[in-house]
Length: 292
Image (cartoon, rainbow, N blue to C red; front, side):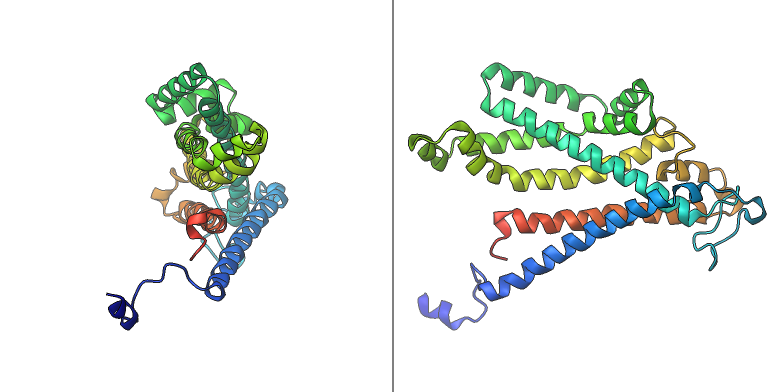
């Protein structure tokens, strides 16, 4: 058996040599940093292009893509490249703020359920079941409409509706960590609750938290675009991908295909870019990828 393993050059390697692992981690770090810088650049460019994106020129309305207007112009002569960048900036800000707030809500409730008294666990479990039993998009529309729609209405609505699944996962991870041998050993050695949480539980649930945050962002940004498309999200005067796509629907039959194609592709690329950032971060913080 041993001779056969040594004779087989294709035998699996349980741990890659350090000199082979380092380039992979550098590549993951470079991808995460590059993707984050691109997202920051999109947000900054959108904020700077906000006033210009609203400028109208009826002498240049409904122009197809060209060197002067790479994404064409709409029925009011507005440059679609500037509108798309400004809309992406708004969508990214809503998605990031909502995903971050929703992740923190999930972590707080999961910690209260796993480490608190039994009634807290029962209350959080009941709340999770209640939120997951209500149709997602309907609850999001109701919260956004009740808060007056707009930027903060959509952001708060997305944040309050996207935490249950992550909270359930984090609760299970914290319970598993709390019942582990190394936590029991730390408690016997005199470590306090805060020390155990900081040194053991936070690193234990950090990969799951990062993955949950990564998965929440595409949901947040796409749901923001969806309810804005339906008219329950951002106001029409604010550039957003959902508004651009909603307005473009009435002009597709007239042959103005660029009004929907380019903003839609930009939204998909932006979501995929954040997925690259999240996947790279997961490889850096998840112990399961330490030997790759």
